[in-house]
Amino acid sequence: QVSIAINQFTSTLRQAANPQIMKNQNTNNENRSLFLVYIISKYSYLSMSIFFFSIIFCITDLLNFWLVNPPEYTNIFIIFMLINGMLSNLGAGFDACIQATGNIRQNQIGFCLINLAYLPIIYFLYRFGMPPYINVIIMIPLTIITLAFQVYIMCKITSFDYNTYLQQTIKPCIVTTA
Image 1: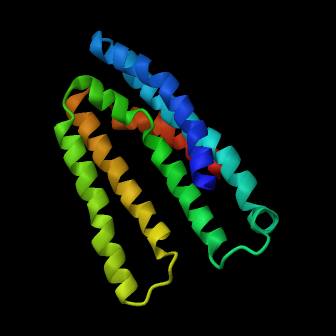
Image 2: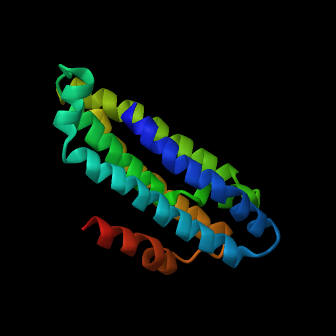
């Protein structure tokens, strides 16, 4: 519920930018479209980080107030789900830009395969006796792989520049987080 509430806030931000990203991509104003992708990814991440840092520093108190007697590992689940949400926001405008090109097949296949890999990985980790919260920890590398895959697709079907993305989105997010 915590993750959903915070993701709704950032998804509203993304939904506001998606029509502009798609419109600019379709009207051959790809530079403006990519600029919006860089900006919306950065602001989605940064806006979620405000909530993230507010929550992680008082997670135990919040859970005790909200649930009175929270289940074991609840704080670990919430923290890792929020980290995963922040990382996924680094690609906030990717889907709209990819969809606007009409070349969605590779993106959808890759996205599905990466997400389907989650099930057998978790199955084997649970079989080897890993703790119950391993599922939210495994989501983080899979989200990073998904982002890397989407960057690859963006570079392949648009004039997306990885270095510009690093400078305009990733670097400010890392600096602000640090």
